[in-house]
Length: 174
Image (cartoon, rainbow, N blue to C red):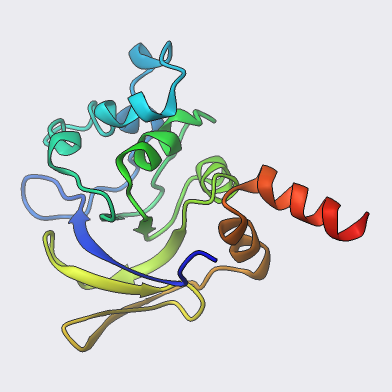
């Protein structure tokens, strides 16, 4: 069973002046010049490579990190690589004010927790996110609230991804 509380180091995606970046599209996350890469484990090195000021993110990211972004994160195309690059790096969750609809669905289907809401955190800070209740804490304080994962979203996450979840449902019914 996968954990329902995640603890990790935060990366707050801000511009050069400390403002959360809104409308980060899938081309900013994983540029189309890398679409020839088919191995998920190789995609991480290109994460955020087309987002000004964040080109070196893959070299600094560590397994277990958590991203925080503004509204409409993952806008644009249905580019699955924009989810897979974070999975390859070991990013364990993304918190944003909102997500592009297709990006959100791709992330859920891939078992990557994507949580909508506002949190008061700083890059480098260690936080704990409760996926069931939507509470975000750090240093013993509540730092914000996010929309908890739905029952189906949690089931897919616990199974690992949508395909694994489908196999579980099939085994249970047949």
